[in-house]
Length: 350
Image 1 (cartoon, rainbow, N blue to C red):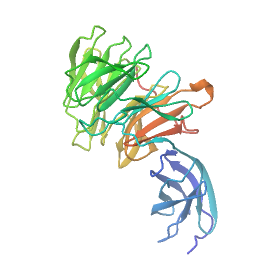
Image 2: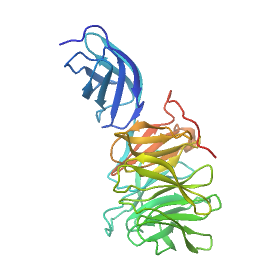
Image 3: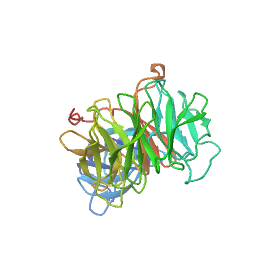
Image 4: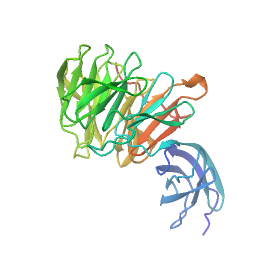
């Protein structure tokens, strides 16, 4: 049964997605009663899960590429362009954010189940998106972070330690006795912080002295750490609740809630404008949630099975545009960032 008249697509929500994610298409005359319209993304057919005259919800197919969204009925409407993430690496097992060096190389883990020694545990994705084995020195590498000198550090949830990795992937012990060590981050002074998912954030200073910096609720998966432009440490960690909190910790270790209401928040990072982005569920939608200083949160990327994210600048000799690198439980995706036309919320307060 065809639609009567031409469908008019007015907006997409969100305007960026990973294959398999859902988008909300708003407009007029999008669907007739009891009839699902045909939705295509740059020619690829998308499965429709909700269809009303003003709203259509569609699942982006694995074959989709960035381009216009079209709805066909009695007539056809070519709507705004959708930015679709591109698969750049697979057969991995990240459990926290990927890490990106000054040259734009991307590092990610094949972490494995706890206690499993994989043949390669850290991979390097070069400027041509070629995946190379880089290190097998650490069992269950979890958090990754670069210090100011450009050295890569990794935590191990197997032995509760943090290691410094040399250019050839060899590991040197930096700190131990950190429980189930997961996310790590460096502050502006060069001190290292590590999250123990059983409830502690440790601080390791330049002399490798280890202190308890803050205590939080235990996490069922991993702590994820990031320093904001205000020099406060922000921490996420999914719990058994569906209404989790991102915590804000002062330089003296005082813990306060930054934002409540996320489902299973994991990797967090700040964009170039100082806005906090988290992979989480929010109001029934899963993907990248961006939080403004006014407390308003919105899902700006739709995607499933996400565990981490990292912002890549225009490094790599300027041949690659700025991008958001997204880690799922087994792969990495690259998404043009910022998405053209994506509205910006207020910057985070400093």
